[in-house]
Image (cartoon, rainbow, N blue to C red; front, top):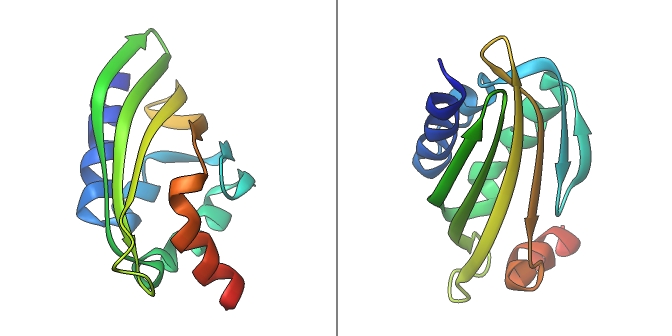
Length: 129
């Protein structure tokens, strides 16, 4: 797949909640700087984290608004719309920006940036256990 195709598949699979296939887009030794989770490294760690996503979110979608690709790098401005499982009456709406680096048809680095305040219901449910 081209970097643009990988990006399009990233958002398609995330919005569909197909986290196993979504994880397949990353290299085994990838690095992610994630706004809420901090630095995450390695595909096994990512798969472990994503196994909990269906229990954490009642609904989750991440819709790309602008996609830019330059060789083995890409950037996407998107909109996240979600509901935390425990707080379904408090919608999460956030603008986001993701930066990607690709190698051998996989994501090797990704960083995301967004305001954390809209994720308060999600973070509250995590702190409650």
